[in-house]
Length: 206
Image 1 (cartoon, helix red, strand yellow):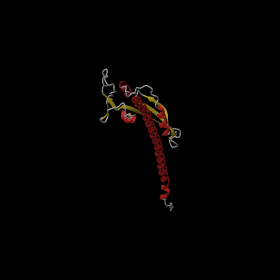
Image 2 (image 1 turned 45 degrees about the vertical axis):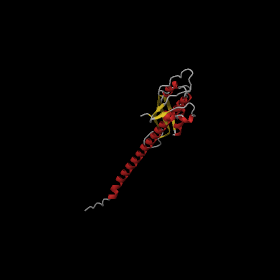
Image 3 (image 1 turned 90 degrees about the vertical axis):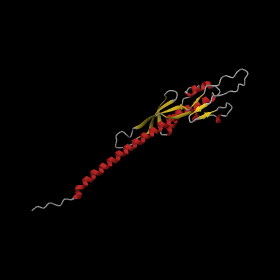
Image 4 (image 1 turned 30 degrees about the vertical axis):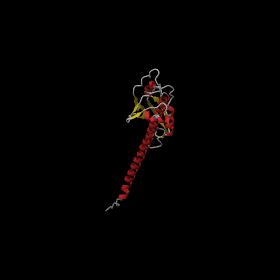
């Protein structure tokens, strides 16, 4: 009678262990690749958001400065609140500065109208080596738009003083969000006047 050698359970299970371990390792590497790509995309979006906000804030500050310069000429106020003023300089240099601070490069920066900036950025770093082919050279891109919104309105300018009357300037009252009214004094120092953040909101577009 021929006897067969006893079967080794360990010998049969070993290939299964190898297969399972290999599958788990592949899944771990795949999750790592996904995480690397997500982190890179998040970095690109953070850089784009910061860059768009910076460009818009730079324009807001310029408009606020123009308002202070024309404080005694209320006839120009509405144009300034609408984004129009003489001597405005380009604002996208601030977008480039903030993007660089977030390890990204501005690909485009455009004023979409007078009170809106859209910025497209690309990360300087690649996603990195992974099991997904091509990630070692792939960079992430993102776009963001920031909007400038006036916070204040004003009443109709006072009528011209009658001839021979005291010609002390009377300025309109600024009625701003939050129920804040500014009674403006032409003789007040700049620090006592509304600041850029009082005159304009800057936020990312929805």
